[in-house]
Length: 306
Image (cartoon, rainbow, N blue to C red):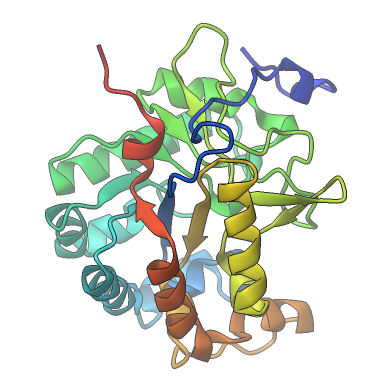
């Protein structure tokens, strides 16, 4: 068990799991394509100007945008994992059913995008339990995976991983092993690992590439949207070929929607992070879908139950 606030959290973690190819092999690894299904007004960057009490008043675009993502995946023959808010599933059940019907994995993103680092243990347990129940009820399929809002599991709330295992989740993708102003746990392993002693529970961090001893993000999100495609492609190829490990890539449906309503009153940093390069994201995404082999998180990182 990992303890909340441990100063030696990194040292307590088990060795990363061996899910890559044999050393020196040229087998094309299958990477994990993941989508965080939330609407544009639910992201952390917009919290200062969009109060939660207004969410049901906002023009929703998550259904339209996620259908566009599903169309793109169908066009390129890609299967992936959709970390979906329970809030979205309650309002757009047919969208969730399409995700499952087309062979993608449905996973939990919590109920309403509250960061795990802002919840105490009982509140977190209630949130992940309710989200899983809502998703399973809507889709009629088991939910095995979880991703915390804004990668908000780190050294100060590692107890959340115990709660997830106790609530029946088999894996999480909630730790980002980088230093960031909002999230990150630099001491965490770069690749999939078993964090809980005696429990077959897996944490799968978003991908980083190591350059001169420093972990550099290369697993999608804003970094992929903002940086040149060639740089992202180089970094992911290096992880596949040099580290012999699969990449975990993530993005949001709102990132392919340059016509979304623009929110006023944001700081320059929030405006930059949220709105820059929305118009190029769909084309960049199509390129990465074609340049690498992709699959679902559960099929890549979970062994079948005995």
